[in-house]
Amino acid sequence: MQVEIANVVGRVVAASEDGSLNFGQIVGMLMAAGIEAYHVDFRAARITYYAGSGETCTVTMPPPVAGIADNFDAVAIQDAIRGSQRGEVNYPEFRRRSQAAGCASYTVWISGRHVTYYGRRGEMHAEHFPQ
View: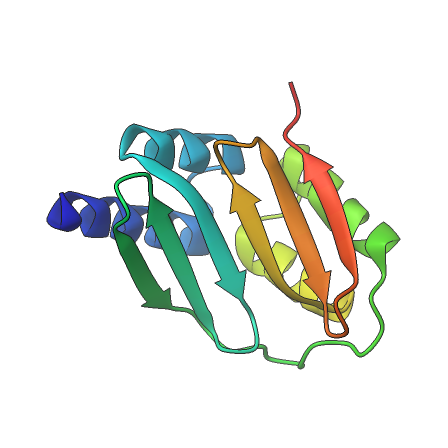
């Protein structure tokens, strides 16, 4: 199972970076592989995927180019989310906008159908998956 999860994660990361799949498609692929959540840590430049079986898979990602803003701006994060949902913002741009809005990390709770965004001082903003 670990090899399958690693293969799916590799495809998801590549598709996120090149914008060939949207968030809903990525979540569908991860669900099919038994992944129930993943955590993106911008400060550590890594993403950890968690399978329902207890397996994990951690990959690196590019570090923040302009750093992570000190102040957490939930409205700016919502704007980036809405742009992504409309297909106007790809993942590299979403990542840049989220970091500029003070997002230090976020967790996608696939089985819980929501995402929690975290600021540098523990601020939080939750977004439920669209219907």
